[in-house]
Structures are given as structure tokens and as C-alpha cells.
Length: 423
Image 1 (cartoon, rainbow, N blue to C red):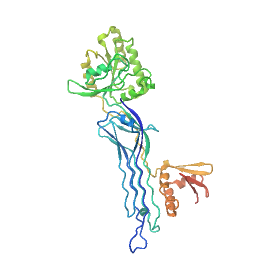
Image 2: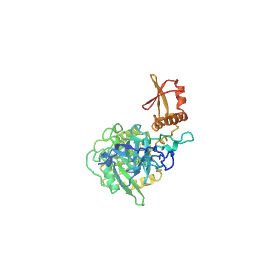
Image 3: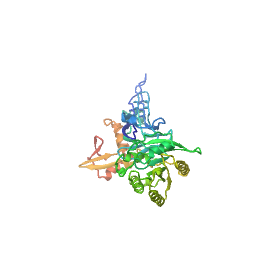
């Protein structure tokens, strides 16, 4: 079974809570604060596993979680940080945010390792909040929650050359003749139900990877037949060999087949439709009407594509084709074919994340910076509340509330807490 698309849930570890503690020393009436910090939560990494070929294991394990950080203790003892979680995936795996479809990482290189979810920061112990005027702070910070996301893992085969074409045009036979791969071959549609990979070694010592992409039919870009699941794999190839049954043995028209397959490529991806393509006129050993080849040759030339006459069954023309493919690949740069935006790095002072809205008579403040600070304070402690109010001022929240029209006595809601505004 070839598994190329799974959805999982992953969570980084939560940070440990800071401790509230005071020194107790002999002959010392009142020791100072000595609460230690909580440990950082473990991060979640994805790393290439050279021995993995599919995503089958993720069919049975859907949830992954890194270790939480330990809580701080008295005597300024720091909590232990949680262990990072490293999830192994095959080379060629693309990781996406399931909610936004944003690509978070493209694991297309050996030994590649990417940080996907950050662990929560450990909370500070009360020893951090001692000042000349606040010598015995009775509050500490709670640890922050680790990031959690629903992720899509999508495996796209890594091959230099992709074989495309309608079912039963001879792609599997071609692969078996040019590589050591042993694909299933039979005289009916969709013999190949999963992509087959093989390594071609030329007489000059060059080598490259070639993939037999299962039959694409009209409407594949909309999901017909085996559909988009196989169009995905073609994205990773640098060169396409478009295999066409030039003999018309099943009543097909070679030129029409050429146009239909290329139309599906263009519908799926404009970039993919512009990939370098070589037309392979197969089954010339049973060609009865030479006119069919001539028409296909003219069509290929109009599209500025090279065309080769071959017979996968007898081996005719294959050596010349493979030599040309090897030569062409040397002119095509190896590059990441998946483009993605750099992920946004979150900072506490990112004012764009803070929003003030009004529902009826209540002002509601939302945004990660404010929510994170709110989780660190002890509402029942005056010194902790003073620290909270100072933090809101530094983040510009008070200014935003004033611009929104807040007045003395109005209610301001942050998370589940309702506070009365007072200048």
C-alpha cells in the first residue's frame, strides 16, 4: 500500500509554572523570595528518515505530543525542560497547517530537520519580581501553553523524470526495460495503482531516478479516476516523458491523447504545464498507419518538444532516448519545486496581534500577547495586578482601549476575566 496523504494532530509541551517560595533561614526573621522558574516545554521537530518510504505508520498513530516542562521549586531550583519530540518522515514529505493550508516545511533533503511547533516558555518564579519597593512578591508566572496544530503530511515522490500518459500506453513496460524496477504489467487499465520508482544507468555511467506515474485520464485535475493524488507526484520531477500509444491500437488518437493529458496538467498547475517535456511515441513495432506518427510529430514540434520513436516491448529506440534524457537533465537545475512563505515569527510586542472590539457595553481585548500575560498573573494579588497593568501599558493596550472610547466604570474583558476600567 502506498500512503501519501495523512492528517495528524501534534502539540508541543507546555512550560512549567514558576514557584512562589521564600527563604527560611535560621536566625533570619523574613527571608527573601527564592521561587525558581518553570522549565520550557519540548518542541516538535520533523526529520527525514532515510529508511522510510511511505506515511503508512501515521494511519494508526494520529496524535503526537512533546513533554511538558517541570514546575519550578523553592531555593531557586529551576524546573527541568521537557524533551523535544522528533517525528520521522520519508524524504519528500510536505507539512501543511490543516486549517490554513500554509506549507510549514518541505522535507526534500537528506538529514533535513525542521522545527514545526514551539514548546511553551516556562513561567518565572517570584524571585524575578522582587524590587526595592516590592520585597516579598507573592505571585509568579504560569508556564505558557505549547503550540498545537492539526497538520497535513503529504508525500510527493522524488524523481528526476516522470512518466505520464493515459493508462495502458506502455509506461510500466518502458520502466521495466530501462531500470531494474519490476512493476506489475497487464493489458488492462490502471494496472499500476501506485507509483513505481527505478534507477536508470546509462552507458556513460550517469544515473537518474525515473517514476512511472499511474494513468492520468481526462478530468484528473478534478479528481476523476485516480485523480489528483497522482498529479501531486509529478510536481517533484524535473523532466516529463509523455508516453503515447502511437499505433492507436485501442482506437485512440495519439494527437488527441497528447492534448488531453497536457490540458489536465495545465488545469492542475500552470507551472507544471511548462515543465520540460519529451514526447515518446511508443508501440512503433505495431504501427500500421505511418500518418498517425507524422501527425503526432507535427504536434510535438509545434509545442517545441522533442519526439522519439520507440518500442518498449522490443527495446527499439530506448538507448537513444535515455542518452538524450541524461543529457537534458544536466541542463535542468535541481531546485525545490515547492515554494512557501516564511512562517511568521511571533513576538510579545507584536501590536498587530492585539485587537479591541465592543459587544454591547463590554470592551473585549484579544490577542496572544495579552492572553499570555493574563495567564501569568494572580488576580487576587495586588502586586501581581500592578505588574499586569504595567504590562498592558507597555503593549499599547491601554491606548487602544482609549481610542475605542472606553470610560471610567466600563467593563473590559480579557479571556474569562472582566475588569473595571479606571484611569
